[in-house]
Length: 88
Image (cartoon, rainbow, N blue to C red; front, top):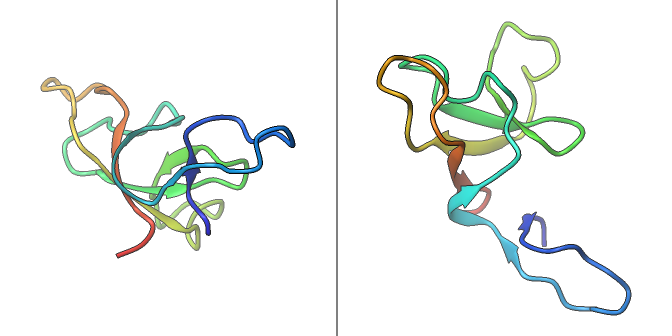
């Protein structure tokens, strides 16, 4: 199962709870949530969440992560709450 882990996975704890759907606070890049219309986010190669930019070679084919829930009213970055959409 692939998802966003909610705690570190260690050999001492063989079971891990993963979130695949719903609201999540994740590690977001600085451009996530900036602006009024760029709410779609993808996973970067190192596991962080980035704004989906079809013109950027780094994430044009990246895996869809979900969308940003709040934005700041003035167009700055809001809290990086993501509605995760890994599985339907």
